[in-house]
Image (tube, rainbow, N blue to C red; front, side, top):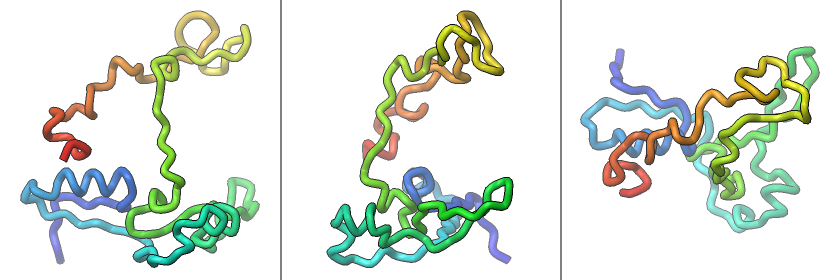
Length: 141
């Protein structure tokens, strides 16, 4: 039986970044990925093929809580769904971390004052660069 110090499930934006960060640590790391390599072909660069014709969407069928079938619009490839996600990442603003309001009525489960839903983590509570010194941050390498 093999022993690993770290097992990373998925090679997308999160798993791939973590693997890159841990690569020089000396730890035995196992990466698990459901998909294979995405073929290099002209259709990779075609928005119509990728997003309209769903050329790379998995044929899986998932089921909701009521047992109703749906197609999850998911991709399984080395590199994760980030291979085909359109290169769009959220750039959160300071106000995205504030209170959520729904008119003047309080939302169910609201905490705090003013009828808003207090978010669990505020922007100021997050350390810069994910808590890593800038030189050690994977994106800086």
